[in-house]
Amino acid sequence: MVMSVNEHGEPQNGVEKLVIESRHGLENEDNGASRAGPSVNGNALLQAHQQQHQQQQQQRKNRYMQPGPLGGAAAPVPASSRVFKFKPEKHGVNYGMRVKEIDSNTGEPYKVVCRFCESFGRAGPAAPATGTGSDAQESIHAKKRQRKLAQTFPVASFYLGNVKRHLDAYHKDKYMEYRKLLKEGGHEAIDAFFANRPADACASPDDPVKQQNAASGITMVAPGHTLPSQPFAMAIAPQPHMLEAGLSMHNWENEFVRASERNVDDSGELSFEQAAKVIARVTKRPSIYPSAVKKLEECDMDKNGKTDLDEFLTAVQLLDF
Image 1 (cartoon, rainbow, N blue to C red):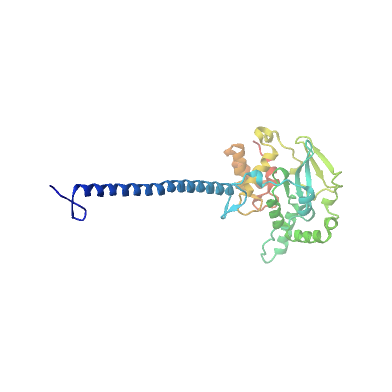
Image 2: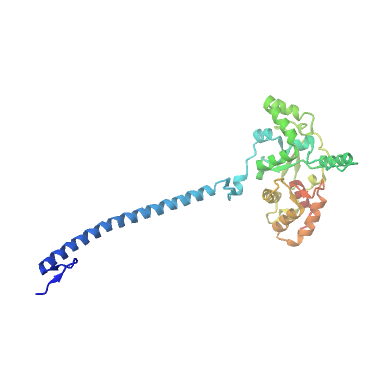
């Protein structure tokens, strides 16, 4: 009779071998069952983790699409969300603006103008002192600033950030004085602040002095007195080539505002080269770039090497497309 040896090296007969194998088989089944349980639970946990991860990704994406900076980087905000609806009773009072042009077709404000510009001119940076003759040089710069067009803002793309930057750059002291009077005396203080100034010579808002521009369908809301050094550009009607292919005044205003918002200096102005690139891109005519730069230089009122919205529109109207 052949004797088998167990795992410990001890001899065992056939019956003992069968008992041992049966016991090992039961243990293996138990171990398999115990391993199957954690495997099933692990799959469920993995699926739950993946689902939670997807939800977190979607939440981050939703937050990223909201207006405002995220981690120092600007979120991709649609242009429409940067535009504020102009309210004369709110923005006109808080920021010293009045309606300058009205769309005669809808009766809605089309363009607003800065009353500080109309009443006091632009303060701007002082001329650099150069020793002898610096006072005369500052006088020349002051006269140039007074000849500067009053800053206007298109209602269709009205953006408070541009208004605040303009006030801070050109009317900081006057605006601080204005805000103090507004806080202390309310609307009566506003009337006193702008009293006997061109902007206040206009009649009440219900009965403004109007001047119809038949070519553009825009009604000019003019003050009672003539504004000082009114430039020829304000009398120019939009040319036919500006109205072709959607190149209306409104389109040009929007293009300028978009370009100025991307500018790092936050001045609301563009260099001649930047503005000429806008014109060449919108018209799809790169060859117009040199003549656009030249025309922008001619329309620069204060010779500072930059163009604001009014100067830009003037140059566009005078260009031959």
